Structure formats: structure tokens, C-alpha cells
Image (cartoon, rainbow, N blue to C red; front, side, top):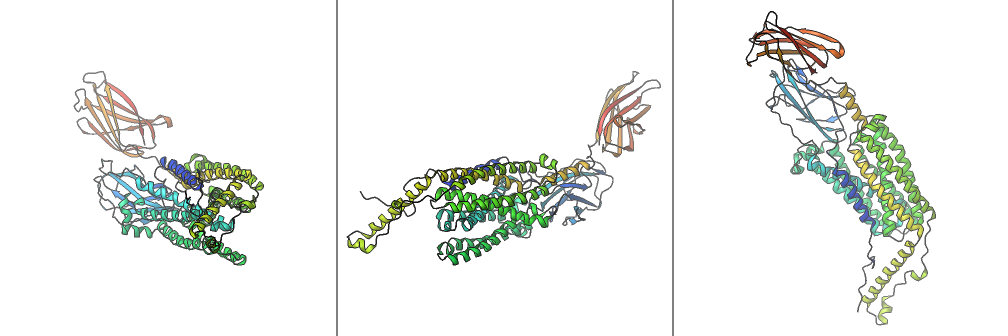
Length: 636
């Protein structure tokens, strides 16, 4: 029976494990778990105030409505809409005016003249300076509250299926960047011979393809992600043009252009560089590739720094280059770790010197990560309460814990690296010299059969070499520790990516402080019903009191008295008093005027402070029959 020789580079033994497959599975698992519990991206700019305030009741219609935010935002036509009770536009419809002053970010829209009384809804939507969409709504009333037919979207901007896909693309983009930059740096700085190894080539190229595809998806989905939430709008040319005019859109386009330069770098690295034999020429080419590749990698990292957390907030001029260094250090460490894992499991030729070089690179990357991470943590958190009491701070604690575990595992890897030696390959398994075709023909052997035998011999030789290297206990221990490092690194990368889509702790605390310092919103009109019985003839009935708008300041009070038969009932005397016992305020007398049978009214009733007020009502039904009843109500 004639045996069929395997293809060049193939192994006759089925491998039950591949590092690339494991890395892909880990990435899918971790990202899937995170996405399963993730909602829409948290708003990174928060509404800290408005004029009129949420729930306020104003006597006359204001000329404009202003909104104050915790950080810079991007607005356009329709970003702030004011709707009347019938859901019609009550503002002029022009683009909001920028009323910012210094560090205060404020925008406003003018209202139409002559607005009638009623409840108005302010709906706003904008893009935070770190590229995330934000939205919200609140109400205020002119004259007195009223019913409203305004129906706001139930789905938060940036959510839904489009938000989910966009979030996945963000995670995938970070993973692609890590593999592309980390893999290329590993080959160029730690293992130059790896440029001609097929598994290393596939790893870097897949990183480039992954990052490019994710960037294209994000660019197409940017318009529906920040707007309608419909996939069909991904191909809206006007919407795409609007995206290109924004900072996040410009960053995505810049990334695509830089990825074109990265493709040229990859072609040279795995082409000309891999084939170069002269040591001097290869050294010069290494320097050129290192400089050019470093510039391209820094440029790609800058597309994140210029459009996300680092580009806004305090010290943005320092934060952006620090963020670039942080991303490059992450890629060099984690991407190089995945490259080492692939090299250890898929190639028999990596030597101890390459592993030691990467150990030094990883140590340097950790130092850079520590320095830049401390600065970023201070900038984004700023206080102990923000570290322990916000989601951003809790994720940051988790990230630090994962880094600590990763460093502990890396310590074991360094110990294995110190023991690692290059296993000598016995002469019996060195590749045999290729048989010259002419000699084979002279012996009457078919040339095709000779080539088949040569391929088979090469595969067997490579397999023996790998088995000998795998039998080295130091190398086996290193593979296990690097595998553990890679598993932890995948989780760390996922947590880091989630951090970029979480509202910074400093901003969240500032927004909460601003909200807590703002006056409490109105509780709404107060309606009381109190039965009474003076004990005399026709002395039973019910007192109904309406206090509108039911907040601190000026209020209007209506008092209605109904008899036991439910009909309006006139009484000789009616008095009302308000007491805030907790603050020892009152009783504040209210003397209402009679408007009609059984109906009294008092305007301009001043309630100086919010709290639990006691309403006392004195009803006299005859010269001698009188009773005082009371009820507690929360006002303001």
C-alpha cells in the first residue's frame, strides 16, 4: 500500500489543544459573561442642574431653558427639546446656545412667546466628550401643573441591539489592538526568527483583521448608536457624514488610515525582514521597523485617547499621552504573553533567549502600567468614597486585584525562565540532506516519489524535535504558568475594556453632590380630605383642602366643605393653620375668602420650608358648635 505524505509543516499527530483556540474561547466566555449583565453604557457627562429646575412651578413663562452638565458635550439641532402638554414644540427649534463659562458647561434654548399655563417636558440628548451618548428628561410647570400627553422613548439612548453590537465591537477592537501590537513587538524585539514562523504570522495578521473589522463596524453603527437605535440607519449617508464631523468619527477614520500603514508594516515584517540573512542589514531594518511600527502603534492608541476618558476632565493635555503609554504597555505585556503562549505550544523552535527577552519586556511594561495606572486612577477617581462607592471604583479595585494575581503567576514564570535551557537536538534527528533528483533518477526512483519521501522525512524530524523540547520539565512548567497568565490576562483585558465604558468615579460623585445640593423637586399638589363632627345639628361633614403646587414658596389653597349628604355646605366660620413641629415653626394662620357656597380660597400662602407639616382646620357650624381637626402632610 502506498502511503500519502503529509503536507509540508503538517503534523501526523492530531493536537488535542491549540493555544489560539483556547485564547479565542476565553475571550468569548469572558466578554459574553460581561455583556450578559451589562446594560447601556453609563453616561459620562451628567446633568447637574437646570433652569427651571426639575418639578419647579414658575409664575410666568421663562424666556429660555438652560441645562448644566458635569463635563463638555456635543450638541446639535434637536439636542434640547421643550414640549408643551399636547406634545408640541415649545422652543424655537434652533440649535442650543453654548452658555458655558469657564469650567461650567451650560446650554440653553429659547422658548416661544406667550406660552400657556401647564406642565412642560424638557427632553435632551447629546454626546459626552468621551464619545458616549447621553439623554434624559424632566418637567416644569407654568402657573400650575397639568396633565401632559408627552410620551418619551422607553429605551435609553445607546441601548438595544445596536448598543449591544457596538459594545461587542469595542471589546473586539481592544483585543485586536493587543494582538496586533503585542504580537509584532514580540517578534521584532524578542524573537526575530519568529517572523518566518507561520503561527506567529497568523496571530499578528488576525489581530490586524480583527481591529480593522471592529473599527468599520463601529464607524457604521456610530449614527444609530447615538441616535435612532435602528440598524438600517447604519447606511444613511447623511448620518455617516454627520458622524465624520464629530471627534469620535474622526478618531475612527484616523484609525482606519493608520491600519493601512500597519498593513504595510506587517508585509515588510513577514516578508523582507523574515527573508533577510545579512546581520548588518537585518539590524538596520530592525531599527527602521521599530521606529515606524512604534509611531503607527502610538497613533492607533491615540485614536482611543483623543476620543474617550483621557480627552475630557482635568489635565487632558497630560492624560492623553499617559493614556497612549498605558495602552502600549498593555499591548506589549498582554499581547506578548499571548504570542509567547502560541510560540510555546505551536512552534518547537523558540529558545530560552527569546523567553528571557520577553521577561524583561514584560517587567518594563508592568512598571509603565503601574506609573500610568496610578495617575489615571487619581484623575478618574479622586477620592476614597469614589473608589469604594461607585461602579468605576469597584471595577478599578477588581482590575488591581487581577494585576496582583497576574504578577504572582508571572513570578513563577520568571523562575521557570531562569531554569530554561535550549535542549540539544541529537544528530539522529537532524534533517537529512535532500537527495538530488539526478541521483534518484540514476537509481531509477520516481522524482515525485522522492519529493514525497523528503516531505515525510521533514515532518517526522520536526515532530521528533518538538517531542524532545516538550520533554524538558522546565519548558513544560513555563508553558503551564504562561497559560495561567494568559487566562488571567484575558479577564483583565475585559475588565479594562468595561472601565472605558463606565462613568468615572470622580464625575459620578460630583453629579451626586450637585444633585443633593439642589433644592428638592416639588412633591406636586397636596389633596387632603378630613371628616369632622361639631356635635350639633347638621354638624357632620367633610373638609377637602387642595394646596397647589404643594412646594416651598407661594401656594394657592382651596378649601371645600361638604355636608353629610355630599353637597356643598356653608359654615359661619372656617380657619386654617400650618405648623412645622420639627422646626418649631407656626402655627401660621391662613384665612381663606369665601368664593361660593361651601368653597373658600386663599392665594399667596407662604410655606417657608419643606417638611412634614400639620394642617389644622377649625370649623364652626353654629354659635356654640365648633371643632378643630388636623392632618399631617409632606410638602416640598
